[in-house]
Amino acid sequence: MYEQDYIMRLIKEMLRAILKLLFNIEMENPAADIFNNSQKQETLKLLIVLIDEGKINLA
Image (cartoon, rainbow, N blue to C red):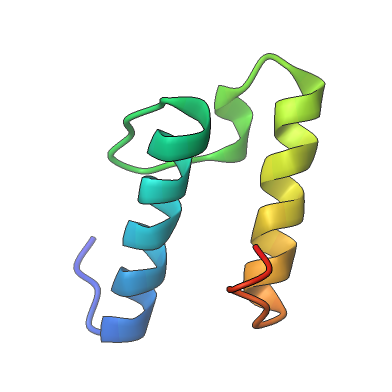
């Protein structure tokens, strides 16, 4: 899928970097259903909520 919005591409790349650093997961398209551990799922959901609220530094 071609992204025309530069900001959305940056956010997706940042999410990919966070997944790599925190969970050691390399993904082309990161998704929440890749985790088996419910604690990791909750952490990812919290990070996504914080990013959506604009609290990127806190995330």
